[in-house]
Image (cartoon, rainbow, N blue to C red):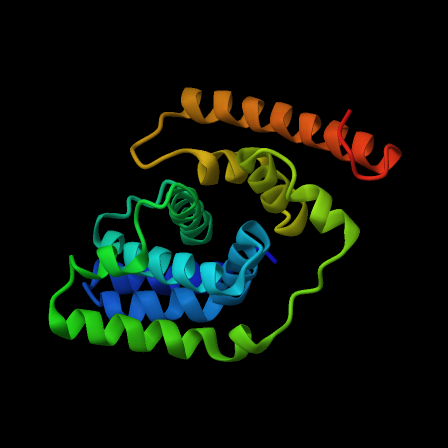
Length: 203
């Protein structure tokens, strides 16, 4: 899994021309599988994953016009998705609230596009193994760092951008966040090692 330059260029051209419908459709067709997979892994629940994926897709659609291209659209989608997961964990913002910001035509089209690009993903069973169960015992941010770095193969800068909240972040701030996520990753590895050595229990 990696950035797809041809998709990034096409989405950027769509945004520049104001064709946000096409931009969303290209984005979800290209990256929807891995985004939804991340949502399942992060929430450990298919219904919850569906809700946060829909919420994130709506937010992506609403944010495409103002997207500044300081990172790839793939990395930005992970930032939006991670924010939706954190909101969901706090029980703040289900997808229905995000839909309230769209008019009837936009709401119908976006939901149709989300369902179409999700395809058969909702019918795919997620394999649950011992390592996944242990990973779920990590603090939420450490879980996300591990998933982005290991399961998605992101560079540290991409992980940092995905972990940062909304806003225009300078290079110094991104560098500091990259250093922090490396530390979180090392802590997570240490915790997982301890759990492996103690039969899944943190001392």
